[in-house]
Length: 267
Image 1 (cartoon, helix red, strand yellow):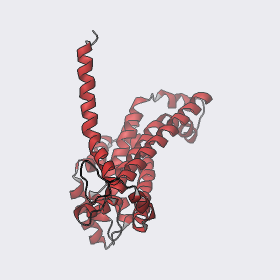
Image 2 (cartoon, helix red, strand yellow; image 1 turned 90 degrees about the horizontal axis):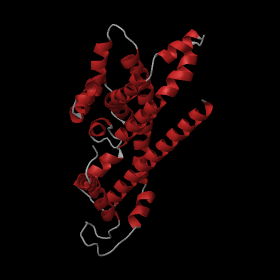
Image 3 (cartoon, helix red, strand yellow; image 1 turned 180 degrees about the vertical axis):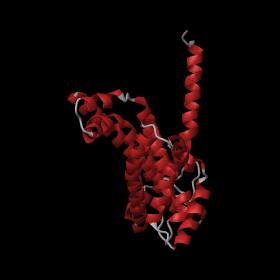
């Protein structure tokens, strides 16, 4: 039985309220980035876009951007690779310690990030490793790689193993099966995992705070500037960060649809 008109209107109104609740803070940050005043007040008396020019001209912001991008790209690449093979062990093959592996691989997800970051910092100090952006990569991977594994494993659960068995019966090698069947079927999950890994690393603050050492990421800089030394440059960088994330999501969707179209053409 279909929902009544009043029920649909109520659901639409509820959805609109949820969206407004989630995105109104971002709108306020956007207004703060174009205000000439040091602090945001409504109504905005004087508008200015100079802070966007200042953000692009700032060497500090550019250095922070490079560090954050470097960490996020490496984490995304490694997470997709580790997650792919981990997902095969997680979901596709039966072996003696599979159940234990499934529990252990997901365990870091449930640790509070601040506790995990502190534990990793203590571990790095015990090993005599000086924290920098490389140790931040390791810290991010400890938390993000299991998430990527879980995302790809969900996809791995959904395709029929008989496809691989049929290819093997027809004489295909293990590498051919992996290249022609397994990877294409898991590609949507791999792309999704890479996207999640990049965004989770890009905006991560707790793990970065404990493990970047002398290096700093954009989330750390934003927090430090909010606590002391606030200027409208802070919301401006925040807006640019969100815009970059949305651009990445758009590119990922475009790549996915191109890959899907190419696969349908070759089928």
